[in-house]
Image 1 (tube, rainbow, N blue to C red):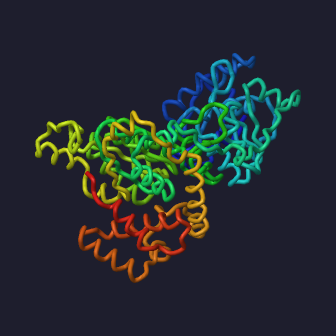
Image 2 (cartoon, helix red, strand yellow):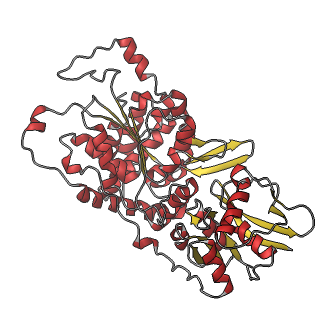
Image 3 (spheres, rainbow, N blue to C red):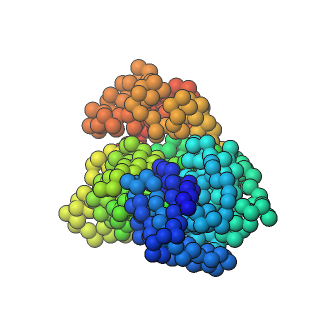
Amino acid sequence: MLARIESVACVGLESFLVEVEVDVADKGFPGFSIVGLPDKAVGEAKERVKTALVNSGFAFPQKKIIVNLAPADLPKEGSAFDLAIAVGILVANGDLEIEIEKSIFFGELSLDGSLRHTKGTLLVALFAKKEKKEKVFVPILSANEAAVVAGIEVMPVRNLKELIIHFLGDKKITPLRTIEIKNLVETATPDFDMEDVVGQESAKRALVVAAAGGHNMLMSGPPGSGKTMLSRALPGIMSPMTEEESMEVTRVYSAAGLMEAGEAIVRRRPFRSPHHSTSLAGLIGGGSRPLPGEVSLAHLGVLFLDEMAEFPRSVLEAMRQPMEDGKVEISRVGGRVAYPAYFQLIAAVNPCPCGFLGHPTKDCKCSMREVERYKRRISGPILDRIDLHINVPAVEVEKIVGTIEKGESSLEIRRKVVKARQIQGERLAKYKIYCNSQMKNKQVREFCKLDEQGTKILRLAMEKYDLSARGYFRILKVARTIADLEGSEAILASHLSEALQYRERVF
């Protein structure tokens, strides 16, 4: 007897319908074969499914069983087809007679018949809604991911026995209610509050501008000057994610298998801080089965590169395309996948290998050749893509040990950032972008017009600093953000002057 069960294969952030065809034949030698370009994990489903059925109280048919995963030319990866294969065997063997049209089965089986937390569940739910399916049967530990998608019935399955009882009508599985994303999105709890950062007023101001416009920033200063602390304080002043942004980030984390069991969405803007020993595939994404890298896991959040000059140059150079395009395309023999990568880069460097070049009290032990070689580790094209260049000097002793008045708290600053982001959101809504840093040249010309005085200032700056065309447009974006923070419709000369200060290289 032949049975057809529908499941889903996830390739990157794309989802494809997979028809699990199961044939249980009385003729021929007993056996269990899976065809249709399965990988190692799919091939091992034979043992998982067989043991799960037996441990759930069902007799495994001693017949010739062939499972075909169609379409046969699409590579099948992972263990998420276990549930569909198990149900297909029961139907094909005549143990179950059920209506399974417009239903999708997705989940990995344990040997005792229970279902494990399975990555990609959100992608499956989105695909089911798009294809007008009615129900998705998924592991109970992953069901909250699917429940954020309205318009489909999410059936949380605890184990195989519970699913069979549901189909027999003895005890029905209750569908989950749709989870409202707006009730889950929260602001990030900062590791550090901005009011606790001693001194560094110019750096704090630059951090506010970076948060308001989503701009990349590079901080240069000696060890202990507060670069890492400033970066850790950034999430506390960033605006909360919208429902659309939360869904975008959750898709990436679901595909990467980084969602915790029972978690519905990513509630806070990501903050990723990879070590400088991270490989190219780890930062950009890749592998034999291309997974998202740190730049994609930081999508719509922050990518913090501490000791940026210690990263291999080849790894840093690979960031140029995602920094410009906001996405990563990974090509392999088996195909191509794309991941979003609209991240905000915050980098920290020392001024020299020992870190004390220009320090007021400590002597630098590096030769000029060593300093030049150290600075060449970060290429000009990468530095040109960074909007704000900030010098973070050593903090004065009096400011550390003396009693000083605290500055603005992260909560107070966040209100200003949120207000500026709302202005940008209304302005850029028709282009489906969120902040000034995402503007293309066309939008910059439309929204960053200068008066005669501003044009004159910018022309002089381009001649003095020999700015590139990319640098010209990035200065205008930063000036637009500064104007938004002050609630100004026009970009004034003072806004442009501050933006130009941030363009001066410090490394």
